[in-house]
Image (cartoon, rainbow, N blue to C red; front, top):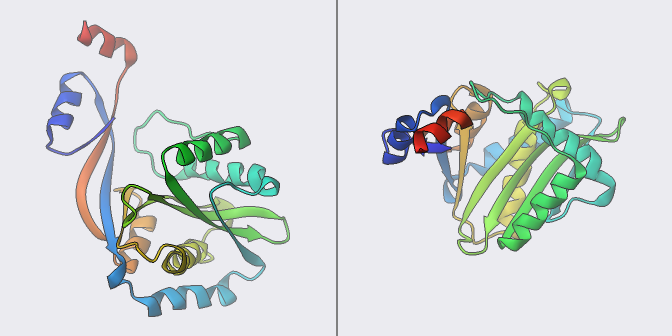
Length: 218
């Protein structure tokens, strides 16, 4: 479970024997404050640092011919800082489709921007944003990841910049993007800070040993 530090939820987790495993920081970006010159510069920079790559994007369901490589790319989130969480991130084409169906049922539009390594035909970087129908002015930044063997080429900044430019076209009603990052994930937090994300609350993810939780619940 996760809870804001110092909240009743955090106190309840501790009282039930949960172990604090990962600290994360929430942050928000007001789209009216985006430096579009910076965004365009990040996009233009890819011509120097990321030759041999191309952009792929979609709304909703991943194209059938990309779903296997997309699932493998999703699993690269397992390389992100996880603190002491006893967690392995696993994806398959079936779980990709299940997540997409969940978004549809919940009335959420999912926009995905990926980078493809053209020589291998594989997706190697992604960022995705969810826009809830019930609150369409506030989007949620979900995963952003670059496969480890394709890092240090500016691909993370490229997909983030392309997403912002695309959102301005497809979701002009948006006012705010909110996200959470592991506090120790300095690389992604640095990118978000450059874009203008403002830090908010500190959260802790707690994990339980099931037997101990059952015992305490009686």
